[in-house]
Amino acid sequence: MRITADTGRCVGAGQCVLNAPRAFDQDDDGLVTLLLAEPGADEEAGVRLAAGLCPSRAITVHED
Amino acid sequence: MTQAEPQVVDFPLRKPGVAFPPPGYAGYREQQGLVLSCLPNGDRVWLVTRHEDVRAVLTDPRISSNPEHPGFPNVGESLGVPKQDQIPGWFVGLDSPEHDRFRKALIPEFTVRRVRAMRPAIERTVDERLDAMLAAGDCADLVADFALPIPSLVISSLLGVPPADRDFFESRTRTLVAIRASTDQQRESAAKDLLRYINRLVAIKQKWPADDLVSRLLATGAIAPHELSGVLMLLLIAGHETTANNIALGVVTLLTNPEWIGDDRAVEETLRFHSVADLVSLRVAVEDVEISGQLVRAGEGIVPLVAAANHDENSFECPHRFDPSRSARHHVAFGYGVHQCLGQNLVRVEMEIAYRKLFERIPALELAVPAEGLSFKHDGVVHGLHALPVRW
Image (cartoon, rainbow over the protein chains, first blue to last red):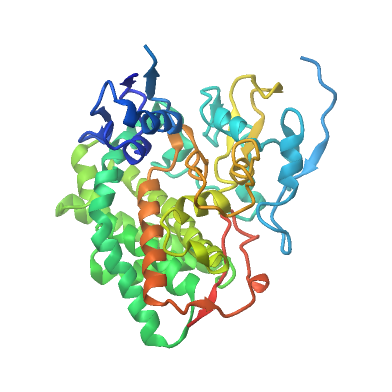
C-alpha cells in the first residue's frame, strides 16, 4: 500500500491525524503531511479509514 | 431522463411531540431520487436524506453554498431567523476559491495539536462551572449553567477576550440563543453588542497584538480587519450553540443509557445520534446536476438533511440505537466537503471533558423532570434543549 496526499485539496479537518496518527500529521499551516508514504500492515486499517473520511478527498490510497 | 411529476411533501419542520430526527425521514430515504418539498415561504427545495447522497451533494462543485444565488433555500427565514449572508467574512456562504482564503488562514488555529494544547484551559473552565453549580445547591439547569457557558468561555479564550470581559461576552451569547427566554429585540440588541465588542477587539489587537487567534490572523494579512469581525462572529455562532446542544443532549442520552457513562466513544455517537445541525448545510445547484437519478436544475435549492443521513440504515446498523461501540466516524454531523466544521476537533474535546468531569464530580446526577417532559428546541435552526433541569 502506498499513499499520497494533496495539500492543495486539504481543508485541515484533521480526520487523518485523529484516525491514523502514525501515518499523518498536520504541518505549520495545518495541512496534511505524510509520516509514512508506505504504511505497514498494522497501519492499513487506519489509513483506509482516514482516506474514506477525508472531507476534501485529499488522500489517495494506491494498491500497487 | 423522464420522470413523473414528483409529489411535494411538507417541509419537515420539527414539531412539539414529534421525535427527532422526525420519523418521516425514513420514508424519504426509501423514495427514489430526491424528495421535493415546499418551505413555509412557498419556495420549493429538494430534500436529500441518504448518507451517500448527502456526501455527494456536499462535495459537488456544481452545487453552491452561496446564499446570493437565486433559489438558495431560505430555511432560516421560515424559522424566523434573519439572513446573515451579507456580513463580510461570513465564508460558509462562499464557494471555492473565494472561500479558501478564509479557511486556509484559520486551519492552523484548529489543528489536532493546537486543540490538544487547549485541553488544560478547557478542563479549568469546566471545573469552574461545576464549582459554581455545586456551590449554588443541589439542582441546576444544565443548559444555562453548564452547556451554554462552556463553549462561550472556550471561544472567548480562543479569540483573546480579556478575562474581565468574559462574563459580558457569555451573557450576550446566552441571550442570542435563548429563543424562549429572550425577545427578538433582546436578541437583536445582544447581536449588536457582540459585533460592537468584536470590532473593538479587532481594533485593540491591531494596536496591541498578543498570543491569540485574532492577533495571529491580523499578522498573516490574509483577512482584512473588516472581514475579520465577520469571521469571528461566524466562529462564535458556529461554535457556541451547536456545541452546547450536543453537551446537553448527550448528558440526557447518557443518563438514560448509563452503561456508557465514562466511555469517551459516547462523544462520536452523540454527534451522530443527535445531529443537531440537521438544517445547516443548505445548498443551491448552479448547474444542472443529477443526484440519485434525480435531475436538479440550476437554480433549484437543496436541503441535505444531516440527521436523516446519520440515521440511514444503509450506512449505520440499527441507527436509532445509541451505541458508542459502533464505528460511526463517517457520520456527517459536521457536514462534509470543504465546509466541514473547522472546529470539529475542539467540539470533540469540549464534549469529552464536559461529560467526564460532570459525571466524575456529580455521580448522583439525575434528571429533575421525566425525560418525556423535556423541552426541545423545535423552534430553532439547531436542534437542542431549551432547558435541562437536573438534581443530585
